Length: 211
Length: 211
DNA sequence: TTATCCAAAATTGGTACCAATCTTAGGCGC
DNA sequence: GCGCCTAAGATTGGTACCAATTTTGGATAA
Image (cartoon, rainbow over all chains, first blue to last red; front, side, top):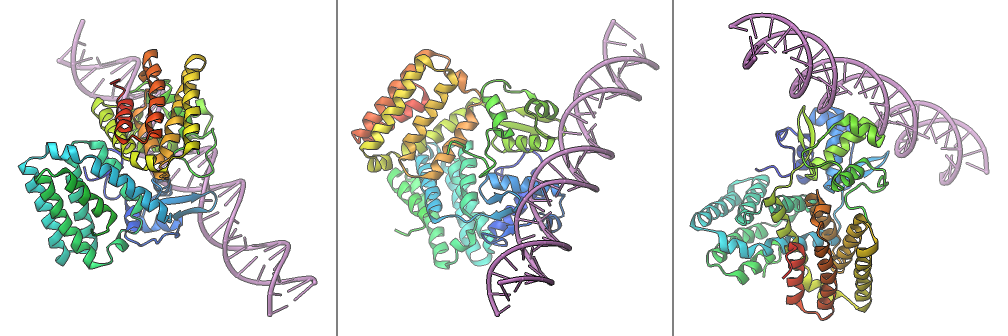
């Protein structure tokens, strides 16, 4: 259930689409880089066909851009685009708040607190990638309380579109620190069933603008 | 700007992905049908490669399902799934209401009224497909007032996922009649800048439950 | 010296072929 | 007569090859 956009059973960790996407998000291919098929072929040890399929999928995901007879290059996310997608995420993640409030139980709160704690612990000991993944786990656990499976995949798709440089968002240690605190605040608001406060927190959290 | 999910310049009307998708949505391939590559090859007069790419893209769009070494078949949209996607559409289309209200001007209202009128006129004279497309034009013109380009594409993707049988939704003439009226009501609420009423109308409209 | 043009190298993208797998039909045994 | 096993047919999916296009490097001329 961790994979967001793959086929049913071919979703091995060795899937070229996922590998390339990870490397793009890790910053190995900076925006604008041309992804040559031969290079990818040798780097991931896959056939030409699978590479082509992967590039085509990433084009559909708007992660790379395709120029006929020229190749594929990593997409540059416009500032406007980033803002637009953030707006959509805010609409979705605040939109489910009523459902979250009405459906959660004590066990869910417990689980969320554990995940938030994981994130905070990794602040000291974990790598940036571990931190990133822990953050994802928390957020998906949060919205999955709504019981809307499609919402999970839609948000995953949106995240993949913006996070061509997820690392750069977290360059400041202070920002991540605040994120960890906000996670706990969100759980508190959820537990208190405070609709307004929870919406406000989520919006701040996505906008990455403290207060 | 009518194509929602294709490459930049290969977006001819002869693209296999679009053709197959249209035929699925037109009901030519009912849910569960196995799409054999050879048949598609001859039907659309395309190379094997393009057919494979199209099927892979449709798999990503969740329009067809892929079973390795067995083939691709038209996806059966679960009732639960349809409901989940409707929820998401409601969150998005009601979520932009504040922006719509703050940004629209007289010319926009005029334009929307013309589109709504087109839809109503086609009720008598147009084919079902024309009606469907007119409805799309209205809805996209509506949400595009928010100035959020990404929202347009996201909603388009959501629509494509559910509308494996868009025709069947409109089997009753009465329902389409109501839709046409609701369009005008939505415009009125927008013009009056009535936030609550507009949200209520949009929710009803998507849920297809009159009052 | 610099700009233009031509040729060679590299890359993409399509086509054809072939192996692996599944389905189906037929025959054999119980 | 029924069920199982086997072989043939069909379909998918991968690999290799080749044509079309673009870029790069160098040579020539102004």
